[in-house]
Image 1 (cartoon, rainbow, N blue to C red):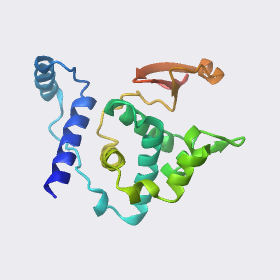
Image 2 (spheres, rainbow, N blue to C red):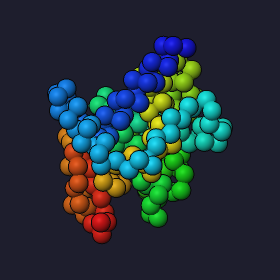
Image 3 (cartoon, rainbow, N blue to C red):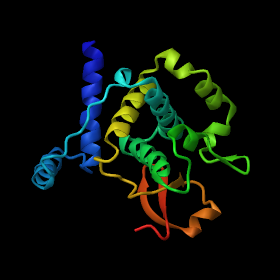
Length: 198
């Protein structure tokens, strides 16, 4: 139990540091935390949600979010994983996309998956058969904790993608990117907003 608590505590610390945009250098971290504390509204309190305490309906949505983070960004830094979570949740909030996380993750346009992993056989099999959950993968479980935290605090956390609804890997150049505003590069992903977004 102590092991899981310490992993969860470390994850929350990493998330908080990441969302504050902190540098690797210890002195810079301390300096930026102090600066941020003076600017943070005192009423901003992050919810330390626990997946096991969520309702089954919410657990289903959080697992869809976790799977999207895992298959899209498991090799990315925490900030990159948070960015993928935000794009997913930003789509849920947008009038142009489905209204649930699972529907956003599974969405297809002309038989093309919006998130490419969902059209790939192996990840989709792992997803539909809950193989990752059953294996007890440490990385996957950490991502479930991350997804739970971001889901519970979506309206309180800084969005590192600045409201992005789209992204792609930095080694491809899809044609659709020309119709959008590029707003961020995080890890190996480039993030975009619609041109009329402010």
